[in-house]
Image 1 (cartoon, rainbow, N blue to C red):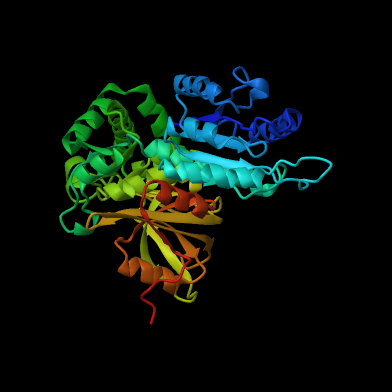
Image 2 (image 1 turned 90 degrees about the horizontal axis):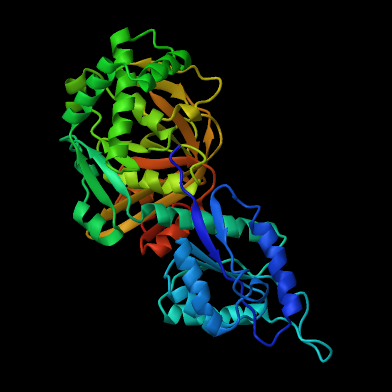
Length: 462
């Protein structure tokens, strides 16, 4: 898998004259919690070596914190409030990076009294976020809640996922393998605008170079090609294909993976039908799902915006599971709130239902995906504006079909259909297992995208 780690700078803050002992207690409690959340994906950079008890409250210490975080190459900031905190210190650190920033403080156990002074945590958070807004710093926050709560753990993890998406999109390089099929005007995209607005680069790759690399892989019997061929035949029923075709599928997977990585890309958009089958003698659909399973999401039909949708979901789930690009095809014949997510055969094998037998026909897979919760999204544009459509559903049962497929049930399909019909979207949706709607909402906010929540009422209802 081609994975990444998020480097998170954590700078706890306190009010200079409030209790250090109490602040330290708060800090140790939340640090214990976050160190156990997605530790395989997050590298935490603390300030224990710079400030008293690893808590910053003096503006003179902010410079040292900034220097350490810059040296560590942080991708995001977490500024937890141990009490009221110091808004000047918070702003000084945050404005030095202009990165995704999380604000949170533990809920106060008691108010101020004549006997003892409380922490006034929420008050300080209100003050600090106003200053961040003055500097134009975008930030996320978790509701003022207890450290040892599901709300805090979920909020922290959602922020990690949000920051990972933003990191992955920054400098994203998409291998554009061939031009879009002539009939598919719907997948047109403005590559110059993607570069200028988001720093996303499309890298042209000739299908001819892919075909030549495939032939070389077969001729030289590369070890990876031989091993993959055996693995493929062991997992799928390939009895309906000639042996030479099966070998081409295996060699094509190796060739495409090599070229994508040589180009420094982490996603791709593939002209998978019309020209390409004529060039190599088979459809390349199977390898799209197979490469998703090694961490390289690929959209079909040279859908660049589809590839970006997949890259968003890949980071959203922290590279722990593959994603797929599905056609919205037909409504369920009986279930009014279900839709068929289908394609001719490019879905990841790792997502196959364990009771479904996988077959490969003409380079295209045939199997049903497993049951579970789904998040779908579509990054797209129209008239210079960029949008992110997102919604959550669950898989359901339905009639069998060919290709790779799964039926998705949602809360109100008519509302979804309306948004997709009137919005700037096409019939391709990026899909992944899990619930990530809140994460996608935050991603859209940070990127200044129009967020289109599938679960909210549209403006076109009759």
